[in-house]
Length: 189
Length: 189
DNA sequence: GACACTATGTTGGTTTCACAACAAACAGTT
DNA sequence: AACTGTTTGTTGTGAAACCAACATAGTGTC
Image 1 (spheres, chains in turn cyan, purple, yellow, green):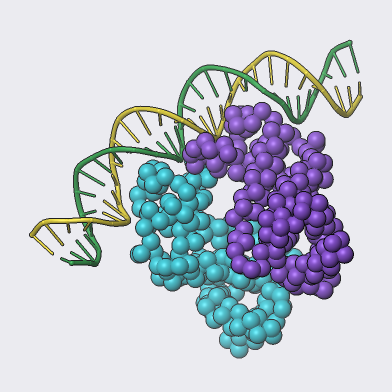
Image 2 (cartoon, rainbow over the protein chains, first blue to last red; image 1 turned 30 degrees about the vertical axis):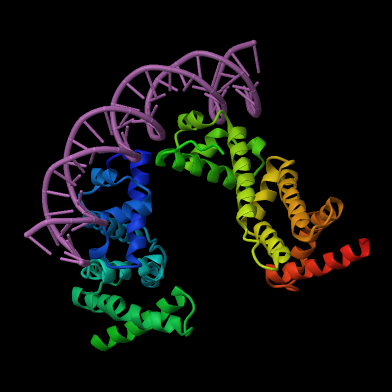
């Protein structure tokens, strides 16, 4: 998107500022985090901060934007290549949500921007709807039903199963979800 | 020692250069590590490197000097306060050598400067000799005997014990060493 | 309301770094 | 021995970050 060529110093500065904000968010909400604090943790001069962002909230916005971009890139480059596309796609999403990004997402949602989780799931859902329609030639309504199931409900349930050790790998989780979906789709048709 | 006031940029630059060299030393010896490689790993411009150090070897020298300084500081600030000074001192040394510094020391010795381990142990030994003389009023010869035992022999033995799970903590290790020393000292007297 | 204290933006002058470009030395190939 | 590629130092210019200082605004505290 924003393809400005950043030199190393700019890249480093923004990187540590973002890292520091995320670190501070583990302690308290964004509203009680000051620019000064962020700079002290990042070991960056405060005036340098203002050369990059107008305030904390702009910094947060960039973090969120990059996470959304990251998710999009992750989904687009997930190789849905062989016969098992449906499982691959589900695995890919589950991988994403169960990776370090997961804790990062919920952190932002709870401490900074209560609409962020929704933004993320919107991106994931629209991606899935399109793919279910393409792969299995489902109609929009069915695809949406499946996508909502996986993202809103399925992931939570599967995370519970995984926490309890009932399933081990994303692949196994995806297979269970697929079975559920197939039954659901049959019952609709 | 060198109390130049470094601003943040200098500190960061030198820090990543040092880290990168240590990282590369895990792969290959210093003689086959190029300035270019170090800079690429550190994400620092090569000309910036030369603004700080004439070559790789100067960078290594600074790393070594700082480790020696670090050890001296560590020993001097080890609080030998109560009745158990002997154990405290041994614990302190064992802590140091079994910490992350240990792998760092052997790495430097094997891949870069074969005299480095000796330099480090010299510092540690002369510190111990002085302390045994001060604390227990031992003569120089006895103190040197004890110090050599702990540093040259003891640490290796205790590390073996620890690896095999025969002892758990530096404190426990130190107590075993102290028992051995007491027997040794008695037999000398 | 007067007080001290801290965070916020903003500015101008200075230091440090990035970058590209260069010549030179070296190693490996054919 | 000529060729190709890589590492090495070095340089000048412009960009980025540092720092100190300032005025302003918010936040208690007496």
